[in-house]
Each structure stands twice: as C-alpha cells, then as structure tokens.
Length: 69
Image (cartoon, rainbow, N blue to C red):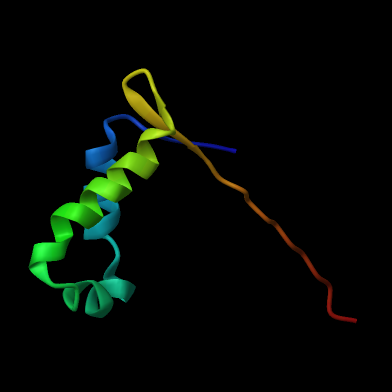
C-alpha cells in the first residue's frame, strides 16, 4: 500500500520526531551534539524513497479476523 509524504526527507523526519511520544524519553537522552549527525543519517536513508517532490514509502497492512467458537 502506498504511503506518501508530500515534501522533502527533512520534513518527514521532523514530523516523525514530533509524533514519537512513546519514544520521547529515549530521544531526550541523546546528547544534543549528536543530533546533527543522526538527522543527516536519517535524511540520507529517507532520501532513497524520494520521487519528484515527495517521499513514497510503502506500507504493509496486515488484517486479521477471528471468530470465537
């Protein structure tokens, strides 16, 4: 299933960082001086999904169903 971000890699990284509340305590422990390198590495990885003016990831969706007998 397509999952598209209508902007550059930097924007999708910033969005993911802002909504990562369950991981906030871990992210807050990263020393501030390491963030430029981390952000650059994330942007480089996301860039491989760049198509035109957006980022085109893909998503695997698993749907399950059950009936209690």
